[in-house]
Amino acid sequence: MTTLPQSRGENSAPAPAASPATPPPVRRRKQRRFLTALPYLLPAVALYGFFIAYPMVDSVRLSFFSWSGFRTEVPEWVGLDNYVRLFTADPVFWKALQNSVIWVVLSLLIPMLLGLVLALGLNHSLAGRNLMRSVIYIPSVFASITVAAMWRWIYNPTLGLVNQTLEAIGLGSWAQTWLGDPKIAIYSVFAASVWQAVGFPMVLFLAGLQSVPPELVDAAKIDGANGWQVFRNVTLPALRPTTVVVVILTIINSLKVFDLIVGMTGGGPAQSTQVLALWSYTQSFANHSFGAGGAVATVLLVLSLCLVIPYMAWSMKGDHK
Image 1 (tube, rainbow, N blue to C red):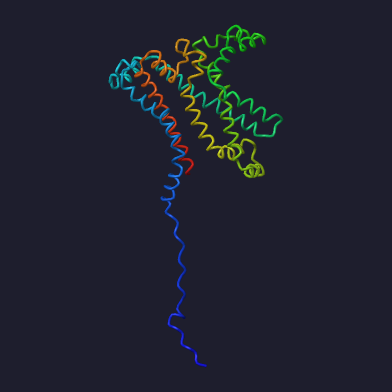
Image 2 (image 1 turned 90 degrees about the vertical axis):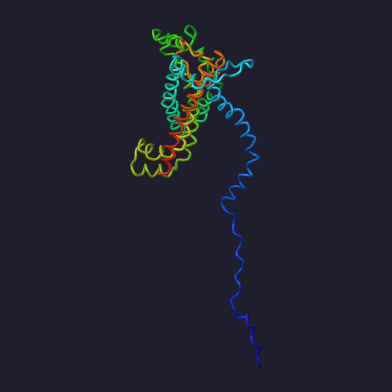
C-alpha cells in the first residue's frame, strides 16, 4: 500500500504555547493601589492638614511677627526679635524649658518603667487579672482637667486625702502644701500625671508581650536561664518595636503637657510649674503677644524633633543589624 508522503511541516516541533501575560511592573501596581486608596485617605488628610499641619506652620510664621491677635492690628515683621527676647530677656522661658526637660526625663523613667513592670506582672494568670488591668488603665481615658480637679482635692492642705492620711498614721509632720511650695509643686503635679498615664504604656507592653514566642522562653528555661536572663535575652529584644512606640509617644505627650498643669497650678506658684506649652499659650492669649507665643511653640516643636528623630533613626538602624 502506497503511503502518501507526509507534508513538510508535520514532523516539525509543535509551536510553543503562548506565554501568559506578564504581570504589571511593581511600580504600576503600587500606583494603582495608591490611586485606589487615595479617595479614602483624602478626608483624613484634609482634616489633619487643616487642624494640625496648618496651625503648626502658621505658628512658625507668626513667630517672626509682632501681633496682638486683634484684627484691627496688622502683623508687623520683626524677624528674629521674638527669639532674641525669648533667649535673653525672658526668665520664665528658661524655667519652662527646665520643667519640660524634667517632665520628659521623669516620664521616661517612672510611668514607662512602671507600665513595663505592671505588664510583666499582669501577663501571668492571676485571680482578678482583667479587673486589675481595667482599674490601672481607666485613669488614662479620663480628661486631664478632670484628673486635675480630683488631685487638687487630694492635695488640699487641710481636707485633702494625702495630709489626712499622714495625720492618721502619725506622720503629720510630713504634711505639706503640696501645690503651694515652689520646691515640690512640679513633682506633686507629676505624681498625678503618673497615676493617669501609667495605664497606657502598660497596655502597649501587654500587647507586645503577646508577640514573645513561648517556645523561646521554654527553650531558655530548659537551658537553665533564670527569670532575669529570660527577660534580658528573650523578652526584652522581642519588645523592641513596642518600646520604640512607647518612648516616642511618651516624649511627645510629656512635651505637650498642658491641661493637668493648668487645672492644678496654672503654672504657679511663682512660675515653678510653668512648661513650654503653657507658656506659649500664656504669651499668646493672656499677654496678647502671638509672636512671642509662636516663638515658644517653635522652640517646643524643634525640641520635639531633636528628641524624636534621632531616637527613631537609632532604633531603625538597630532593626537592620
